[in-house]
Image 1 (cartoon, rainbow, N blue to C red):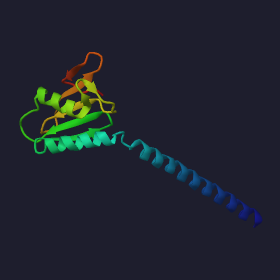
Image 2 (cartoon, one colour):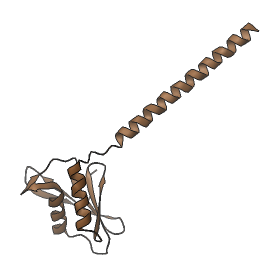
Image 3 (tube, one colour):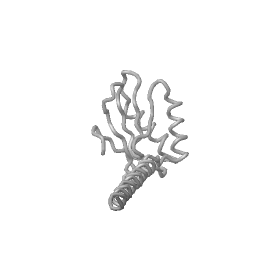
Length: 138
């Protein structure tokens, strides 16, 4: 009888240990996910995003993606012109003439009404000119 009781206690301790280990691993995964979801958008980024959405309401919708991209989606059939994209880029990224402010966001990705990628715009600090691509940078 003592042997059976001792055996049951050992099995119970192993089960409790396994439950605690599972709980700790689950807690670690939860905390890691929570930390990785924190956006790097600054208050200035958020303010400029809000300003773009107010200025271009009904024409474009702007959202952040992956702390790297500012995405513009058109609401109508007309695609965004490159010149307009440059003005939008300057509004969001520039503080002065050709002086890009510090932010984690780098690219302006433009999509049409159906969600198809149109083009990507970026700024080359060394050349002090815009980069334009028909393919997104990943």
